Length: 436
Image 1 (tube, rainbow, N blue to C red):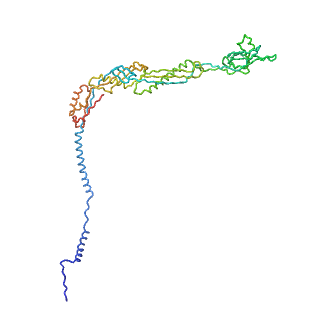
Image 2 (image 1 turned 90 degrees about the vertical axis):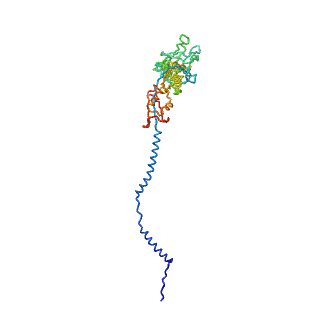
Image 3 (image 1 turned 135 degrees about the vertical axis):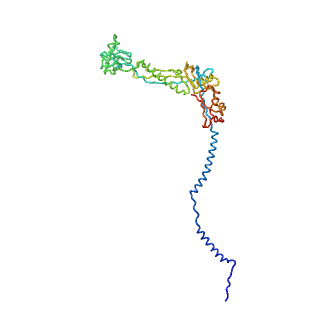
């Protein structure tokens, strides 16, 4: 019986090795599966760490900025404000000058300022009531037939205005010349010549509205024609009446002239002033008005309820600019100011009045009364330089040495609170002048 020999390998066969490796890996997988998860880290702790890490540089940067700003403010913010109240002296003057339209510039030496001529014309018309009382009597009128039976047959001419007397005693007149034809003879009969004549009562009133009447011609009395010339009316006279009416009087006309002339003058002056700008001064006595026409077509005694009146007025004026007066006055004050002093413009005052005015000649003599305050000159730049580095008392001494008794009050303010002297930076110093 054969005995099997057992093979021994120094190196495992590949197949076997593969199997061994699989066996060896299995525990590793198992071990990995059995590993415990990592412990959880707290989010709150993590945020706190992040917050600290962010705030630290922020606080650091802020501190640095504040430190730099503090240093900057310490050296740059200090300033000094100095307020000075100079003593003000008032200078007053009176001066006579001429406003002349022939000059164009202010002449301080000759005391002349320019003037300008203005003109405006207005025309108005207006109805005015008649105030006179009168009795108005309408005159009766009508027609009569005038006969001529004079023999031998002769035509007769009567002038206009020939009177005809009615058998009731009312007198009428003819309104035109009358030519009465001659009578004609027909057999043994005489046929009078005749003509229609328009007549009117010599007076007004209802008494002349007479019925048909017989008329004679009084003007022929004492002649051969008196009994041969006669008249007859076949219808009543009409139109006679009596009543109260208004009539125009002399006082009415004069009153209308006064009222309308004044109104037209006011209108002309108003139109004149509208031409003059606010730059100019127009004195009351520098306006000249002239009534170029004033009339009515209605005569005194005319019976009417009203009448029309018209008027035309021309207004002329001489005006001057206030700025020219101010220029003259200020130049005059400056010429009189003591050396080293300055005019305080806000205290300047002026009043003026006209002495004589020649509007047509273009000249006006004016009286001026003007004044202004003056004060000692202050050289702010030089004074500022002399105050650099000075304390409160030194500043007062500097101002006193420069202005003396020409100052009424001084106020000194340092800023911020730790500053006690004027900074050495000229731009940090301000000097202000105040006037009470």
